[in-house]
Amino acid sequence: MTVTDFLQHWSLTENPFRGEEARADAVFSRMKDGAPGDTLAPPATMHHADFEKILGDLRRPGSSVVFGEKGSGKTAIRMQLARRIDAYNAANPTSRILLIAYDDLNGVLDRLHERVGGKTPLESLQKVRLVDHIDAILHAVTPRLVDALLDHSRPPEGIDLGEGLKPSRRLSPTAKLDLLLLQSVYDRPQNAHERTGLLRRRLRVSVPPAIFWGTLFAWVMPMLLIAALVWVQFFTLPAPLDQRLGYWALGALAGLYALFILKWSLWDRFSLLRTGHRLRKQLRVFNRSEVSLARSLRQLAPGVRDASGLPVSDSDEPRYLMLERLKGALRCLGFAGIIVVMDRVDEPTLVRGDPDRMKAVVWPLLNNKFLQQEGLAFKLLLPMELRHAVFRESSAFFQEARLDKQSLIEHLSWSGATLYDLCEARMAACALDGAKAPKLIDLFAEDVTRQDIVDALDRLHQPRDALKLMYRCMTEHCASVTRGQQEWKIPRHILAGVVKQEAERVQQMFRGIRPG
Image 1 (tube, rainbow, N blue to C red):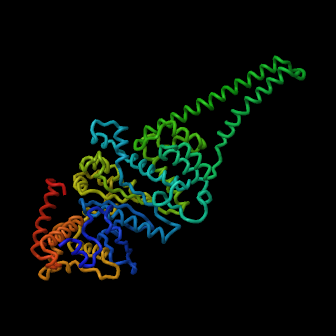
Image 2 (cartoon, rainbow, N blue to C red; image 1 turned 45 degrees about the vertical axis):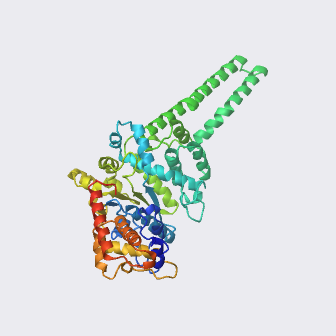
């Protein structure tokens, strides 16, 4: 018998237990999110018991720190958070939440390793600072926001600015200047200084007076000097002036003009290049040249680009100020808060699942001041190895991190009964249109009880392993009978044998003697 025959008999369009990774799982994508009290939610919905605690109140976003084993559903929770936020935004168009996925750290860590120049990846990662994470987050959201303002992208790649007035009319004058400063510093390297001009014109921000009058003076003054020279040379000056005095006056004006040109074209540009160099030295998680930074900053008024508000040192205060600028601009555009979701910290090439490297990357984020910002929440979905490392830290670390205030989930565990419901929800998502979805107990022989299946799933603890168990039960049963026998129920001995093998596999995986 083939698995297809088995599925067709039970009115299932595809195997509910085939997927192991939420990002590539077609069945999971069809399991719609149902909010509490939503009576119209389809039966194929399933959340972890702690999901609502992790989500929190979207009207007042709060941070969460979650530890879970591989396959415990962290990525699925991240995707469910995105669905719930989308639903919330649709219902609250004037107070939406901006979701920032901080889950692809490869580029960030590779550039930092290149800039820091550590002899080993661990040596470089141990130099990761909190300000590096803030810079990476600002660099992740600023280009998307600029793209949306310039109409260079559309959701889901860009940011949906909503309907109504144009952004240039919704933004306050202060917010416009804040956005220009954020773009000047955190935009992507490609054509960043050109995008500064485009954004300035789109936001209807006038050219700074110093640039306007300086440019005008630089071009008009030579023509005036030439006209005056012609007048002195070929026309009679009124008494008591003579030609020699006219030449002296022209020479003095030419000298003053030369001094102005030296300051305007050399000293001012050198000062901006020096600021650009200081910025590039501190912005270690993305590559932006000093020249590009200087060209962008030159288009801003001197008061806006003041070095005291720029991230030109390792101090975190300018970064917090940049975050406040971002939040202020987003409030004008209809966003009441920001949620940053961090996931897959064990996957980057430089980390490779090493606990010490993961610790070096994540520990700077465990800062109470950073995690408890108003209107900015962080959902840290972390591997279980880091939980073990947390409990080996000192009391000083706990005082700084204040994990008791971060909606801490120490272990993202699943009971057998919850995994049973998860399997049934996936079967409901695969049922033929108009057909009644089978129950999980229906797939097994009469001598297998519901509690037997719950106990079997309870030994595996994780959704990924539960799906592997059910998949193997199905495939081994189909391989042991012929199509003509038409035995559509999985016998007890196959369930017992597969449970034993899967439990051993999970134990070996936890001990690190097999891949998974």
